[in-house]
Image (tube, rainbow, N blue to C red; front, side, top):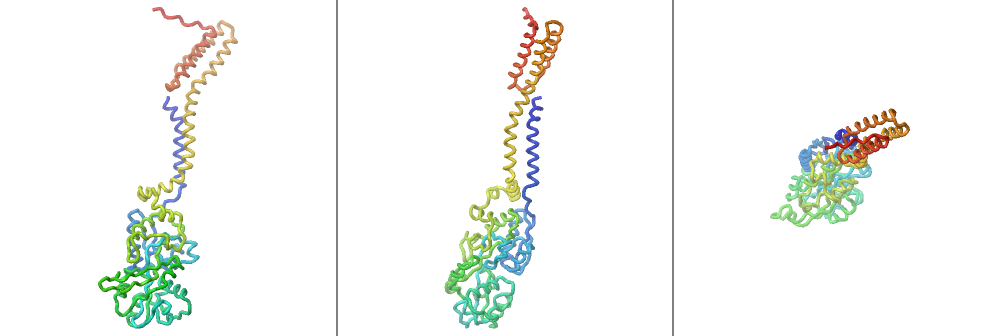
Length: 430
């Protein structure tokens, strides 16, 4: 009986809590996608190598990364805006107002210097001196060409078409060595094989950017770096002096509607991949928000300020993501649960006592009927009903803590019986 009462009170509370949980489960934020499309650049390039590292790290978290070969940063931006890819590496300094509406940066990742190699015998002390020379600045649609064109605009003056020749990388290198062009520009990692080849070539030299600091201050997507003397080859003393350069800081760019869980796992991967030192930066400098030239989300800002969230530190990705989506609904659920839990004990007490106090209605009615009935056979009938009432009450089963209320009721029944003239039971003589 007591267990049945407990379930009558607490059963609805438990059922309501379970119903609330099911509602929360179905209305909380959708789960993240299982597949992410990553703009990887051209096969064999630095971007593609990094994209493959992201693919391996995200696979460990249960997220499949589909690599999409592209022509480079400009192509990546176009595909992001067309919603054909979800994330890509993009050279800094290429975005405009349109991209800032739809895209978000997850931070700067590494520096891509702007290398300008000049043919030996051609005198050029500064980038502006190339205006009258034959210069190849990368193929149409490439990040190299976009950056070179922006720098030419910064330097001012008229730049003829001969100073804006369009050639693929291999063709530009061959033309430079053959003397068909006077200079060739590339935006590339210092580890790129063709950059290392040109740095070791006797027939060309690297053009310094003495105003690199000023250029970088004018564009958040650019950075001023120095190729230190001898860092490429200490024994051969290459380069033979410090060379200031302008570098585009490559960023991890996503669509602004990307799922927050995917954004979080990308930030984790970026920290693991790009914290390594390079010839231009010490360990731990990247990733960062210093050179981001796109808006950043609040989650990204929090990540760089506080690191991964508590859940991401201590739980696997799938568990952390579920808890992160579900916690928002915990507040209304708890708001509902607390009053229910607090109300259950009073309701339980009321129900148990009601089983006792409900007999007082019959007891009172019998007392009033007995008082109004003269002594005799009629009153004897009332007393018989009191006896049956007393027997029924004797069969009540209540929790031990409510026994005093039960015995109080039984004593009141006995009192009414005596009041209506029932003879007290004779004492048993031993």
